[in-house]
Image 1 (cartoon, rainbow, N blue to C red):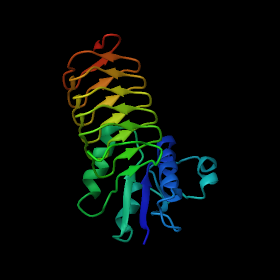
Image 2 (tube, rainbow, N blue to C red):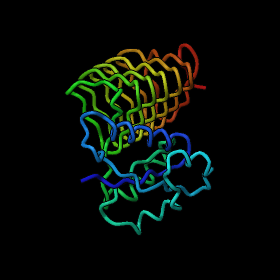
Image 3 (tube, rainbow, N blue to C red):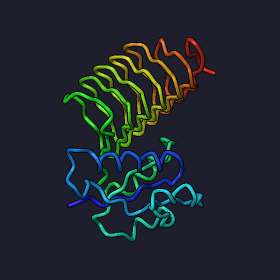
Image 4 (cartoon, rainbow, N blue to C red):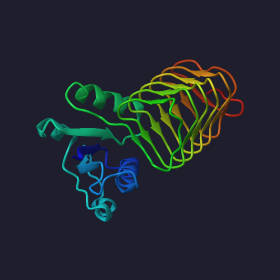
Length: 216
């Protein structure tokens, strides 16, 4: 039986989440009916219908609509903001399931732990002994080295290179094209600007930019 899902967030990344689901449903290892049934999008804004039309998946209304749906409908959050993901997840996680979604064009070892709601996009490379928390986003063509730990609601943008033994605390935001040296730690709610090179630890709440990355 296919698992029913709503995608929370009907913007660009929400549609990328739908791409991941469609790829999973079409994978050779999946039964003919696919693994997931997408019920629709939930979004408190007014998404452009023309961007959803090619998918044939509708905007069903605001996020609160999930409270009225059958208990067997799970959710995945297609919103880039770590803080918003936390707020939504804390609202619904006591009541509903949130599966991890790993694109079939991603690679990973058997020693990777995927937290609930985690989304791994195409081209991501994960090596071994990696732990991903709840609702982590790994965008296209990012890499994660051995023994890395990514906390709940961390966002890793495209083309990020995370070396071995790196720790990202909860709600960290890593910009596009960032590199993180082996063993560095990035504190809770820190932001690393696009193109930065993180050579040493970054404290919680700091925005760090540049090469080497320094507090802004």
